[in-house]
Structures are given as structure tokens and as C-alpha cells.
Image 1 (tube, chains in turn yellow, cyan):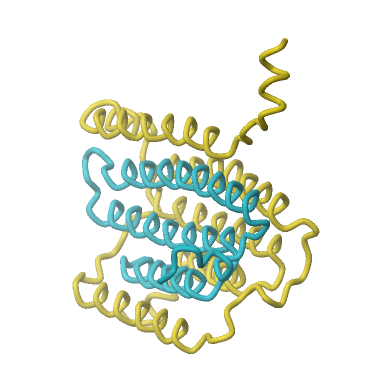
Image 2 (cartoon, rainbow over the protein chains, first blue to last red):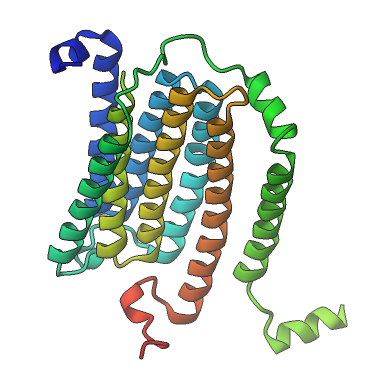
Length: 183
Length: 101
């Protein structure tokens, strides 16, 4: 498939637009000087990813991504930033000074991953423009063949919930414990 | 659409996550970079699902598992960051050199 054929498909225009948004937002997540901006750019990257999932006819996963990540995880991040970095604002000391090795390593990771995925897979044409994968199929798979991983993951979530509360709660001072015992 | 374009985009996102992980000093920003990397993995899973078209949508199911584990990871991670901040008044990884040899 030549580049002219590739760009001739309208779905690839959509892909290019979304992909550029995702790449720009991802780059700003790791380079922004403001912590809050960094978290908000992650919204752009994740929203673009959800768009890509819709292109690949995975609509249920796209909405799960929007609800769980953009709805919950980003809010959690913003809470974490507000608690640990108030007042939030520009901060020059956010990055390490020496950036040569990180840049070299990430470029090497990108080249290795891109090269190996091009070499390992035939340029299969994806038929993502058809109808969406039905949520019924995903649900039956989750509660059928993958019911044990599903239960394990739900247990992991429960453990994370309990663990998060236990780690983050403040221990009572001895005076407060006495006061509580007196009541 | 061919499968390579998604794989290369995911590789670029993953490399950005690696860069952020190494360069950032604030723990919250390091966690954000980890999220970026997990997101790249999700793109790969969905692209492969679209390529293989498994009868049970295995790729999508595993993407949901990855999203769930990432949510749990963020919850625990931020709880630990909160605890460190409360004890050390800092969320900077350079300051956490107590157990450094």
C-alpha cells in the first residue's frame, strides 16, 4: 500500500487528526512546566485515545476509558496535585537538569518498538469502519471465559480501596486517642 | 487503516512515557507518565483485537483489565504520595534518598 492510497481513505484523515492531537498532548504531559497543565493535557491524550478506539470499533472500551480515566483518575490526580503542591503554579525545578540520556533512551525505545512492530506484522488492513463490537459480546466474554480474571481484578480493586484508605489516613495522636476513648 | 499506524503511534506514546518517567522529579508527574505508557499498551491491545477479530473480543476484555488495574495503581500510588508528603513535606523524588546507598 502506497502513501497515496493510504491518505486517500477518509478514515485515515480522521486517524491523522486524532493521532496528532494525541502526540501533541502526550508530549505536553511530559514537558509542561505547570503541574496542573500536565494533568489536563493527559485528558487530551486520553480523549484522543478514546477516539481511536471508536475508529477501531471498540466503543464500549472507549466509553470505559472516558468514564474511568477522564472522569475519575484525572480528578484523583488533580486532588493529589492540589494537596502536595499548593500553591500550584510555574515551577522550574520540575525536571532533572540532564536530559540527554532520557532523550536518547526514549528515542531508542521508540525506534526498537516501531521497527520490531513493522518487521513482525504484515500490513494487515483493519476493518474498523464496520459496526461496533457489541457490548453484549464483551460482557459475555467477561462473565464467561474470563470470569476468574474478572473476579481477581475486582478483588484487586477492593484491596486497593482498603489499602488506599489505610495508607492515606492520619494516625491519631496519643491525646486524640485518649479523647476518643473517653467519649 | 493498517495495523502499523496504531502500533507506531502507541510506540511514540510509550517512548514519551519513558522520557517523562526518567526526567520528571515530582512523584505525581511520574505517575502521569506511567498512565501514558499504560495508555499506549491499551492502543496496542485494541489494534490487535481489530486485526485478529477474536470471537470473544479478548483484546477489548484485556484492555478493560488494564484500565482497572491502572485505576487501582493510581489510588494506591497517590495514597503513598500523600503519606510521603505528610512525613517529609516534599513530593520530590530527589529528596527521598533515605535508603540510597
